[in-house]
Image (tube, rainbow, N blue to C red; front, side, top):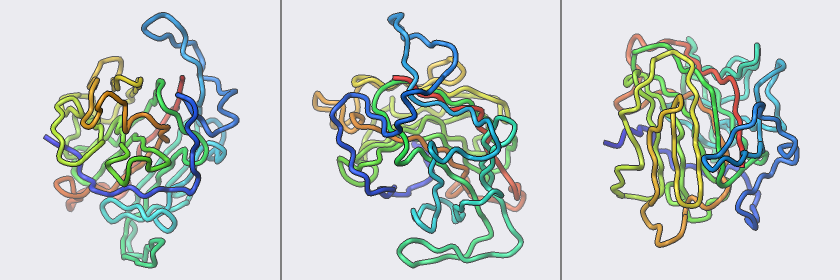
Length: 291
């Protein structure tokens, strides 16, 4: 069963054209000096090499690592929320990044880049590594906490997509959902690999990865040219070794992807109800990447 609720066709968020001349490409010069802490080893016993790390020390978002996604400039909205660059929605404190969705008392106008607009009471926060860091293949680890509620209307996402739409518009160029949490399905987190229309691939997702709601969990993606494995708290949730249209290649999962962290207003069968919390947040302890 396809559990993904958003049907947004992701835009290309920047005009930077990436020249992919290596298996691993990172566009953040500072990432070469990143420190991921204790050495983590591959299954063959060799160490991973740290390429990106943020443990959110300090009191503000490190904008050399993160780009704030805004509806006004990127056009993104899921359930009618307006993404803004505001301390009410994006904060760093106590070693944590907090992305908060808020429902105000008065509907305000939210404008998109094409000049269209809509009225909404909801604002929210989303950050990505657009123009700062992308990588193909390696290991991604994120420790995060989602809202402690069982009421529909809230979604939190740890996801990835390419900065350059090499194979065409979404979903043809791919998307890796490391973890998506829907408050209607509060007791599980759902991964999903998107790479084409009308495909049938039982290993592209799973809705059986159960987790305690409101607790801290560690989400890991290990990505090679021939496999994608997503695990939660050390337990494998999905492992995919062949995707539709592969034809002996790794397309579309053969290009650098960025990381995104997003707090979302639910839609579809996870739409808000009368008692959906007016404020909801996802908290992130750290994001680490190795090659």
